[in-house]
Amino acid sequence: MYLPEKLNLRSFVTGFLERSGAVVEESGYGLLETLLPDQLAAHFGEQMLLAFDYEVARENPAAAFITYGSPLLDSMARLAAGYGQYTVQYCPEPGFNQNRRFEREIAETLEFLRCRPPVVSYQWLADHIFWCFYFRAVFHSYEKTEELLPVVMDGYTGLAVPDFDHWWSNIMPADEPQYKLSAAESRPLPELYATASREAGIQAEKKAASLQSQAAGQIDREMKKIAGYYGQTLREMERKIAAAAEDKAKRERLEKQMAATRADWRRREKDILERYSVEVELFLDHLVACHLPRLHIKLELQHRDRLLNIIVLYNPLAGRIEPPVCPVCRRPTTRLVPDRENRLVCADHG
Image (cartoon, rainbow, N blue to C red; front, side, top):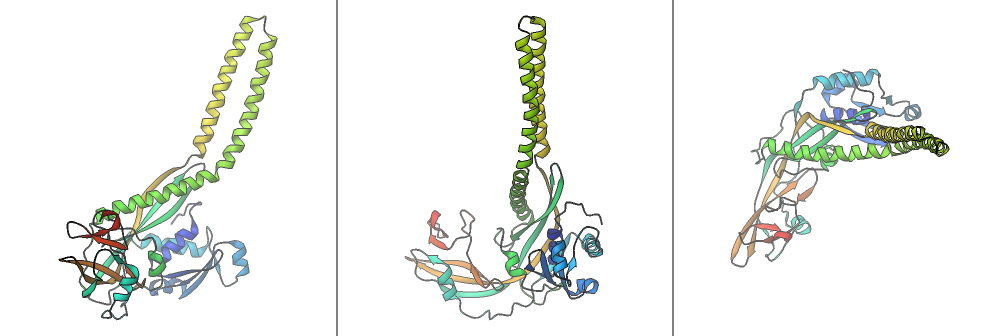
């Protein structure tokens, strides 16, 4: 498999390993420690220490140096090419007491305004899917670079989950489910993809702006260089025009040359700006569906003469009660208040 010279190697290797179910941890500058699942252990062993900097590799003799053309990188590239565009991973058995009471965690996380304290009426586990969209961004400028941009979407809420890797990376995902649970409701996949595409577009724009900023110094140097050249050329023409005050034809010819020189100067400046501008191509590279059991906790709340209900989720991997989504603005919130339609909404819409 061909790898472009400007591919972010660390991003590619980390994405490939995590996508395959490996546990990846940064153990120092330019140094990754990995614990590999069975399908990769057959190729590379159970553990690997990877270095992405030559000096770091020299200081850590046990580390494998990852660079273009290295046999290890070539092997990873071949495996990545054959891995498929869609894969499924399962969280192992959650391993927590799903019958324990969560009133304290809920009280510490959520605030219900103009209501009596909530009472847990029922709770159950359901299988949730987190959709991991991996977009490949190609940045075209004076040089071409590529980067893999991950966006993880919560199928249940339809929201992006920026801290997904923080808690999913603590487990060794399985290829087959180790539990039998009913599936939680999920937003339509096209809707999730559209949201993920927008999120990836924002990431790509920030990266493009960073590349543009890095090129600012080179643009400034080239602009000053041509400014010096054209400035000197125009000053010489101005002296010739002043000397040809009595020769109308020569003066007119020189003035036309000056106008052409100024136009050429503007064209050269435009060429420089266009050469260092950054254009982005963004497309979906692969998709991973990560299954995770989450606990549904149904709450009852008394508001005046009304009894209201809301469901909140407990994430066993993150160890937290997750803020519910406001039905009006579709944003997670920790402060909820009843509205006129007997819904619990965020404080901004109550």
